[in-house]
Length: 183
Image (tube, rainbow, N blue to C red; front, side, top):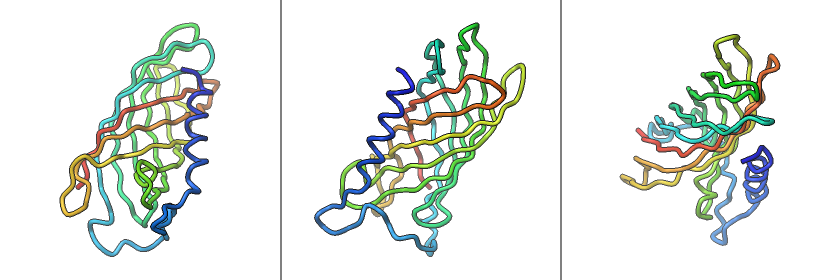
């Protein structure tokens, strides 16, 4: 898959966020302070997917973990640790990344959209020859599969992101399946 496919998917999600369900519940929740412990929505997740480097590189598997919480409704903060191999066009190299993420979570009544989020990340990429700054946009969703008292306990979802990498390193798009456990 190319960078264009990932950017098209993210753009399509962003274009649909203006929708509002007939019930009147807005897709854009009003920002508010967290008043109950459950509103922090702490989570830990496993991510597994693929990494598509820019240019002539081939797709490689990617895996990692994500931890985060919601310090202010509907904004989330998280940290993602990922491991992949990147095909630079002249060879494959290991790449480990640490990405700090900020997200905005949608609401309302529209299936999938109410469980979706958009955001951006900023972090560091480590490979055998150097360390680089990276960052970029991301979009995803987490659909609850088990709940207790209307709070998600386990969710399944997906995360699409594009990482711009400094130091003349190869930029890459990623598409991951996500399994999250919510506390």
